[in-house]
Image 1 (cartoon, helix red, strand yellow):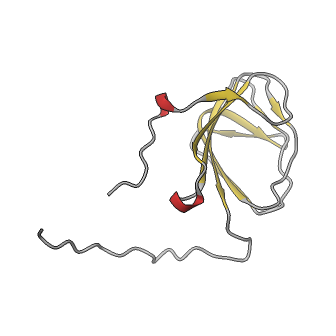
Image 2: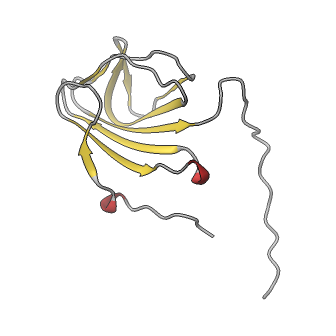
Amino acid sequence: MVDQQVFYNQIEVVRFPFPSEGDITLAVGNANYALGPVMLHIVMRPGAIIPAHSHKGVAEALYVVEGDFINEGKQYQEGTSLHFRVGNVHGPHTTKNGCRLLVLWTERTSHESADLSDFTIAIRTAA
């Protein structure tokens, strides 16, 4: 059973609400930690810049869905994921040709490891 279903065409797309330069949009796919990590869709147009920053309460995983993404002067292509611990300063972020990013924020602390064996097959009984 799905607890929340989100279709991208139903998400409100807004101008990136944090200090930045250029054309950047943000769409929030999930903001409820009870349903998993916060899920952000970010689109950066060519030359856009997000300055160096940190998050004091969340770790961040960033996935380059499309285009080129530059973090701290190093260019990453689509299919790359970058991971930042709670409080780790990262950026500036920019792009030469534009990019689409999927960003996940988790509320876990930097001292916790995921239990990758946490997967149990559900047994359903006939109704």
